[in-house]
Image (tube, rainbow, N blue to C red; front, side, top):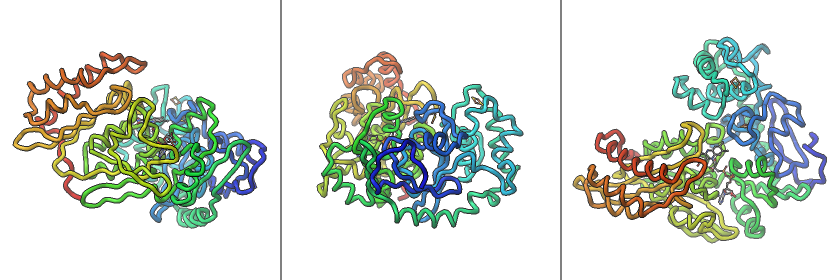
Length: 494
Ligand SMILES: Cc1cc2nc3c(=O)[nH]c(=O)nc-3n(C[C@H](O)[C@H](O)[C@H](O)COP(=O)(O)OP(=O)(O)OC[C@H]3O[C@@H](n4cnc5c(N)ncnc54)[C@H](O)[C@@H]3O)c2cc1C
Ligand code: FES
Ligand code: FES
């Protein structure tokens, strides 16, 4: 057994088992609030992963996490600073210390960084190397645009991105994937992880923090009924920050992020059904296939490290007025299955948001699934306005959808985030557009009507006047794009 972060009084059931680089770790005394980054640095003296921001923004702490999903072992980047230890069961954590060529010399990613002079301060470099490694493993074609996307979650404050991008483009000249140690050992590791899944401990108690990592949806739902004040943690990309930034205590905690039943994706001819623990990265290709304009919108959400763990249920469940998925799902006429014990009810996503910090959800109830109807006649436009293009929270987000009959709009939905206490439809403005041609004169009327739909506030992101002006401008932008046919209808292939 390894030592725990602190010496604590523990429940003997509280064992988290995972692989760290080449070693099996069986860890007793894990606390619900313990982070992977602290464990790596304080317990294992693996100092390669750095702490920059401690909130998932800078990428200095990037590691790879391998999990078996749908029968194959996939490695993805994530931020170790907000990764909570009980979520690690049956995973393989790979840190920068594990990176080397088969002969023990520098790995191709490292050689590329050295030879392109991609490292200046050095502090952010291990995280950048791990992000490039993650993209390389996933066979992402090293175009300028793709590399930029892979590095959205890594901040280089000395503006050294030029040499880093050059390094990313040259990795394959220093070695081939077939010689990569991690990939060579993948079949053995996959079996190891499957074995760990079977041995997963379900309940842990550590000092005052009790947590459960349920083995099934059934046992989760039952436990939540019995512990109605428990905090649900899925990807922890919000909850992790409560801990690292606000030093919050959460107790008891239910870790649901890896529950297979909540990670299901089903597509039939009428709708897409997404389990609440489907991550942004898993949701993106499915939705983009049917609604192509969604693809770039997803790339405006955080960086890969967050997209690989943050879940769609968490994004709705946190009820943020500037969460990016709520306007999207409302624009797509989405519904939510809420479950409490064995009882279920289905509500429209827009009805989940009642007022600031007030949601249509009761104690012990949770988001089980999100359903998106497929409508081949839908036109969909997606916009996100933020101070920075990459890895920034929305100042205003807007999703516009409608159908067209005889050149006139109907079933219009104009949904905005950041314009009020909750994500909301602009219903007066929709009334103006419904039944009319989408021309410049109707845009002017719609822009006027928007003032009766929203009274935005001023905050650190923008003034109320800016928000209103930008929201009006987006209606005009949509009309111009619609008429120039730049944006296309949803994909008809199911
Ligand atoms: C660096 C960074 C960048 C970010 N950028 C963006 C961005 O661009 N756009 C954006 O929208 N968000 C962004 N976020 C916020 C965050 O990624 C999302 O809100 C995320 O979707 C939350 O999902 P999670 O699984 O991590 O939730 P968690 O942190 O696990 O949980 C969040 C909340 O939802 C509740 N919850 C979780 N699952 C359920 C469920 N099934 N039923 C009911 N309640 C549930 C939890 O109890 C908690 O209150 C960013 C966060 C970080 C750290
Ligand atoms: S320390 Fe900055 S993302 Fe983790
Ligand atoms: S190399 Fe570290 S900030 Fe640029």
